[in-house]
Image 1 (tube, helix red, strand yellow):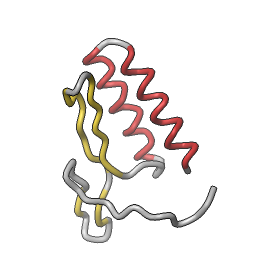
Image 2 (cartoon, one colour):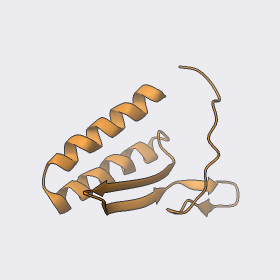
Image 3 (cartoon, one colour):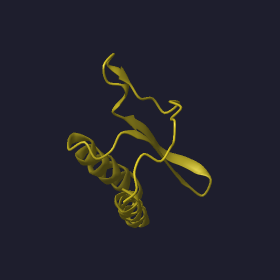
Image 4 (tube, one colour):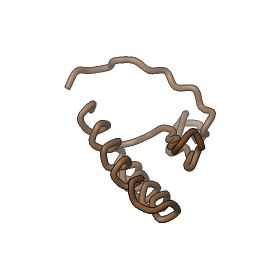
Length: 83
C-alpha cells in the first residue's frame, strides 16, 4: 500500500512540472481511475508556491449511509496491515 501511494505521489509531482490547468485535469483523471478500481478513497490537496491549485475529495466517508468525502473530512489514520 505504501508503494502504491508513493507511486501516485510521484506521478502527480511529475504531472505538476508540466503546464497549469492541463496538469490539474490530468491529476483528477488519474485519481478518478484509482477510485473506480477501489484503489483510492480520500482527499487530495496540491499546492504550488504556497497557493492551493487543486483540492478535491473522492469516495465515501460512510459508504453504507452514502455520505461522500469532502475536502474537510477528518480521517482516522492507522495501520491495518503490513505490506
